[in-house]
Image 1 (cartoon, helix red, strand yellow):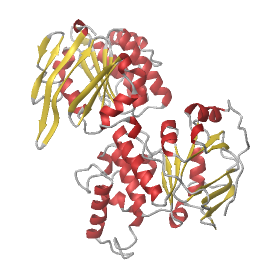
Image 2 (cartoon, one colour; image 1 turned 90 degrees about the horizontal axis):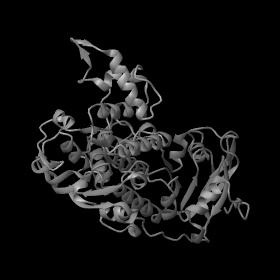
Image 3 (cartoon, one colour; image 1 turned 180 degrees about the vertical axis):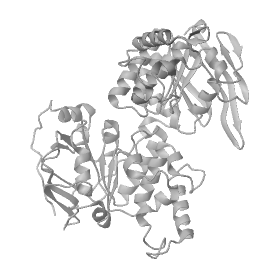
Image 4 (cartoon, helix red, strand yellow; image 1 turned 90 degrees about the vertical axis):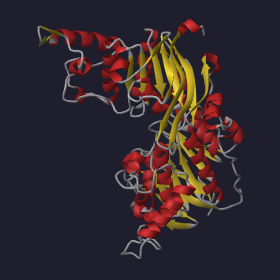
Length: 514
C-alpha cells in the first residue's frame, strides 16, 4: 500500500525488563482504516508492545511516528489525547455507574460547574446507536454482559476521538454469537476510518477479519502479511517456526486385529443422549465430533460418572465396569480433561504443584495415606513441569496466573501422574495459542503410542482430521456414523453428517469385539 496511507510507524522498539528482553528491535506500520492483527505465542511480546503503544509502559529504545510526526508517550492520557485507546482483557468499567457516566468519565459535559447529564445521555446514546448496541445509556454497566461492556469501552474511545483502537484478546470471554457480533462492530469501525489493532490467539478469527497480520516470536518481529498474502500456512509457520504440514504429529497405525479395549454399549439418558455405542482399541485416538448440542459432552459426562445414565454398559479390557461417580472412573484408570478447564478441571487458587499431584496425593511416594512427603511432592511436580514444558516461574505459582495453554498442560500433567489407561479429552486445545496446541498434539500422540486409549471430543475439524485414526459423528444425541477411511476425512464430509444433510451409506453397527 502507498506510504501516505500509513498512520502509525513502530520503529525499532525494544523493551528490557530485569533479566528479560521482552521486545527486540520491532518495526512495522499500521495503515489508516485497517484491522491489523498482531499474533504470536504466549511470551511473544504482544501485550508488552500494546502497553507501549497505549502509553502504559515506556519503551527501552526505539520510536513511534504518528501521522509523520514522532511522538513520545509518557502516559495513558497522552496516548488517549492522540487518539490511541487500549481495551484490555480486564475491562475498565465501573459497574455501579451508568453507561453514560462510564463513557464520559474524565471528560464530563458541564456548564458553570454543573454536570449536564441530559447532554451526556444523548451523546452516549448516539455513540451506542452507531455501534448497534441493544441497550441505552441510562442502564448501570454492571447489568451488562462482557460483550456489551466492551461496546461501552469502544463508545468511550470514540468519545475521545479514537483513531487507533487496540483490542487485547477481545473475544476470549465471549460466546460464538457475541464474537460474531463484535467482529461486525470492528468492521464498522474500520469502515469509519478507525484503525483497529486486534490481538488474538484465535487464528480462525484473525484470518476472517484481518486486513493485515503481523507475527511476533520471542519478542522479535517476524513478518507482516497483507490482503491476499494472508493465509494460515504462512501465519502458523511464522508463529511456530515450522510449516503447517508439520503441525500435527505422524498418525500411528493401530493393529486392526487387536481386540477392543474400551467398549461403550447403549449409553443414554433418554433426554440428550440416546443409545450410543462405540469401541476403541488400546493406543487408538478416537475422535467424537458434531455440531453444538450434539450431545458429545453429555455422553462423556455419563461415561465418567459426572451425570447419571439411564441405559448403557461399559467394558474395559473385556471386563464389565460400573461407574456411578468420577472416583469410580479414576479407580478404573479412566481420566477426563473437561471442556471448561477453569470451572471444572483446575483448582485455580492452588499452586501448580498441588494441581499436578491432586490425583495421586494419597499414594506413595507422595504420602503414606496420612502424611504428605513435601519433598517428594515437589520432586514430582518439578519433573512434570520440565517434561511438559509448563511455563511458570516456579511450582508454587498459583495456576490462575498461568496462560491458557500452560493451565491445560498442568491439567494434562495431573492425569499423566495417575497413569490412566483411557483418557477422555473434551476440547483439549480450546482457547490455546498454536504453539501450545502443537505441544499438546505431540503429547497426545506420545500417550497413544504408549498404549493409552484416547477419546478426543472436539469441534475443531482440522484438529479431528489431523489427530484421529477414526472419527465418530454425533447429531441430536445420537451417533450417526463412523468414518474410518482416511480418504473420507474431510471437513465437508464430517459437516454433512453432523448437520444431517448427508444420509449415511450404512447403519452404524455396534460390534462388541470382546
